[in-house]
Image (cartoon, rainbow, N blue to C red):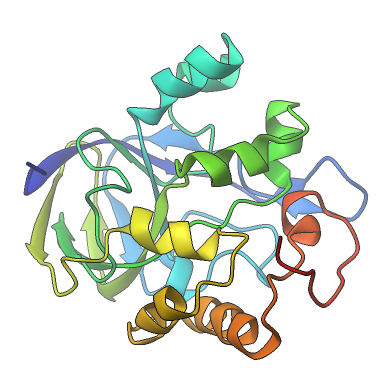
Length: 238
């Protein structure tokens, strides 16, 4: 059974700096912080994002990544310095006890004096490939379902490592993030499953993606996101 409460083991922030490819910026390198930090509508006030077109904003205010996934990644990739402490995946919150299998869309969570709501799972991008020096790391994250997720901020306040995350509400108990991601990351256009997802309060980007699949009967090109390649409109299902 999923615990109602877990402890926030690490609170992390990062600064946007020049990244691995010309013209790119990223704040994916997060480091643990001590003390109490302020949280506003866009997340931790001392945190940054390198590309606000696709990162940050109210629907991606705080990124949570399950600490228990680290051991699985070490088993698959071998020892990596990045995996020796939290922050490898650009997360703001690191804790053990909740994963994509048992956190649902719309879960409301109190931590410190902040009220959060699960807004979406993470859609991994090519910056993970460069960060880990593993050419298909973003695809591995996507296929494994070990993506982490985002919170939107419903009530601003303050939070610190050691605070308790307490789940208060679960309006969509049949929609764990793992189930949603299985639809979003499928190469098949499963119309009935997609229509069920479209009945949920999805973030606009997820809704547009699924609506296009219904309209075009095709899955979009993942290359720009996963590999940083030029975009094409869509690719046939297979």
